[in-house]
Amino acid sequence: MIGLRIPSYERFEVGGARVIASAACSASVRGVLEHEGLYEFAARQPDAVALVGRAPVFAVTLPGDCGRVVVRHNMRGGWMAKISKDLFILPTRGFHELIASLRLRANGVSTPEVVAYVSYPKNLILRRSDVATREIANGHDLSVALAKVTDHQHRVMVLDAVVKLLKALTHAGAHHQDLNLKNILLTAGEGPGLDAHVLDIDRMGFSSPGSPLVAKANLDRLIRSLRKWRDLHELPYSAEDEEYLRLRSAE
Image 1 (cartoon, one colour):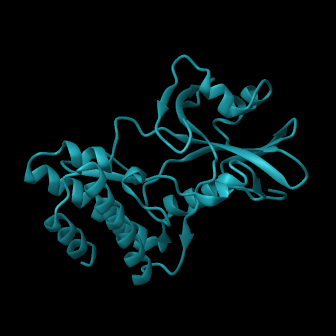
Image 2 (cartoon, rainbow, N blue to C red):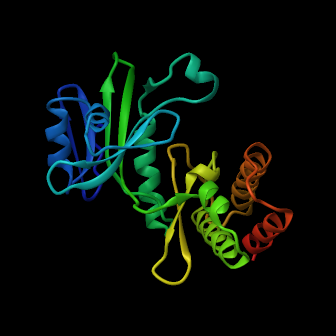
């Protein structure tokens, strides 16, 4: 983070913790870190709402006027978790998530604002990190939304929101390596439809805007997740739904 300057964000250190936080929330984050880690703070708050993830994720209210955020401790998955479950070489995943969020939002892709990224030293090389993102209230992930809808009209609304998100990712040239049902959040839109927001973007890669290879990779990854949930969790997802996604995404 040496020399990094991002408009509307502040960079500072508290003890050994290195921080990039939005200017509106930097005082709140600094106050927390003077006493404990950001994730430890979130975990012990009486108003914390635990969310499902690789590790517990907490939606809490930060001190001052910062408002509600979701705080996550960055964890590894797959075989690397057996070696180093939460240790990363700089730059950590939190930094990648901040940059990806800024780039996606600038290109019209809906994803939560990164409020703060904090890394803590383990030694001279390795660090742990926490990320706080703006909470998107009253949403359901795609697995819940598909399970809840019982009529054709509302199912089409869900699928249309997903198609809109897929097209926005393609327009931005953004490849989500783990685009699954839990990483798409649906909320009521300002009009009659739904809005879809992409989550867990710390491994987002970028290619040429409008790339057909990106479009195919994102769609194929999501369809694999849909099929898996259909087979393992009896998710109501049909061949007609899949054909609708493929045809609309190609328009």
